[in-house]
Image 1: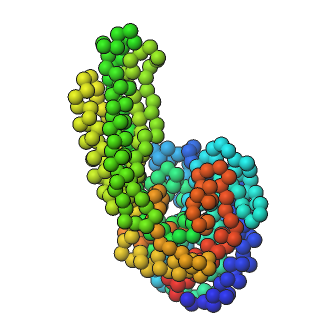
Image 2 (image 1 turned 45 degrees about the vertical axis):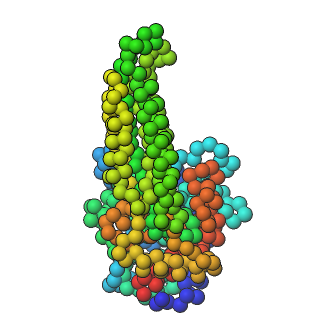
Image 3 (image 1 turned 30 degrees about the vertical axis):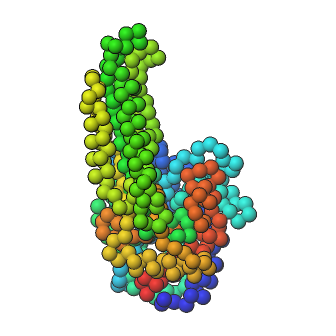
Length: 408
């Protein structure tokens, strides 16, 4: 490390009270996705970051791409802090959040602090890492770090919609070409792999008929129930497949939405359902989709008067290590263990994140940021989402220390 650890700790501690206020201001601005009207939050974040002395690049996403992504507005923010010649490390956190939903006992946009915890939607996932990454960078500068390389902050706004107009867009447009990437974390662990996800929409078409003469129609709902039963049979089979990645168990399949029919007294002519298929890192996404499509097509081929249309809604490729990831993971694991005062494992997680976009581009990537021992403890995506503010301070120290190690 090219700076005194005591000086870095002192800088992190001296900035912490201001860091908490900064995070509270971010939580107070809604950025629910859907509907995905995230420009107001980006504007507020940019103003707050500029007040800290950063030069903030605003990169508006073209309106047609925003709408195609099912959103209203999105502007990505990029900060570049060049310390000298050397590698570029991008730190990516997303400012869009899931809607609060029911069951809150505190204002989801209040940023209320009780007993050392801040409550609010996005306080853990992942507005916290706007704060941890920005203040880690401030602490490095305040501590007089002499480093070789550049730290970039990629603050994006479409993780809840898939990330296509966030990190993926920044990379495809050539706005950033980092050598390493760190995506927002949500627990003490350093995450080196995560599941992929496939969303398919299946439309089952038949022929309507009066309920008094169902024999004159072709019942789309009856066909759909057979198809869904077949998928549930596949789900039972998937439960026997185990991933070799610690923290990840088995592939999963969930049918989450179903709609259709005309009226109670009419044979349904069309039924649509959507399924979520989570893929472990060992699986190939295109093979998974082909398996489902073949299974459904074969099941439906002898159903008289029934036709299928299968449409892919979303595909997130599983994320895993690429060459160079070991060095990145080691630096963050070592720094996190020192900051947390306990062993910090490297693990996989059974969800998907924006990290995959960097990994798919061949960029060594890990997930690390502010959070508790497990995502469940933070109530991420649930009512009364919360963050232990001491964990925010420790994670900020860990991020700053890891950057000093990697760029030393």
